[in-house]
Image (cartoon, rainbow, N blue to C red):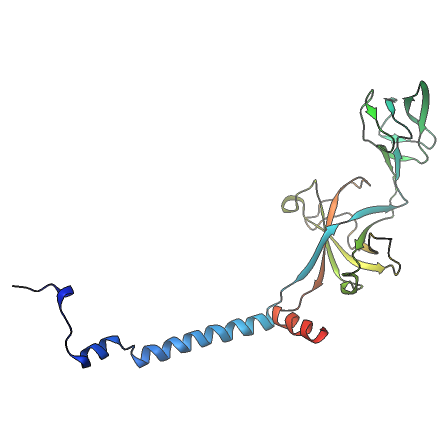
Length: 239
């Protein structure tokens, strides 16, 4: 009769001790592998860069400055027939408010961008038009940095700007750098920091954007490229 292996009882104490022990060679190899992995992680955390970034919305401005036309009162807007380009003091629309008709004129000349529909109701302060100068010399960005972060901002830091209506995977990003840090905080909004665009309004994918002062965008400021371990050590030193 063949006995089931599971029913075999190890009666010898020496046999039970041998079966329950881990071979010394395997133990030494396991400790060595774990030690190598830990040392590798420490070395990697010290030498491999780990970028620290700050991401926030950014305002884009032009030189000469673009004009933004807003509704002066609540009322109904009546657009005039006008081409893509407008001249200074040209009547762009009429605003009917409180039984009076208010003409809306341009204060500058350039490319007209319309932000409303004719016969639509608008509220006081709504943006109706923007007029972009034809010969823009420069486009730059303005960031508002919180007070607790301003000491991390340095001149020359790299900045990547993404236009919200243009996915970065398809259109690319705009390269910039911190060019000026204003010393006086803007009330509770934070410190004003200027970003100069390295290649103008051309993206990393060589796509040339049409500038608009109404375009929404966000910026990523690269505060540091130190490794994780170096950053940890420096934070201990600062504290």
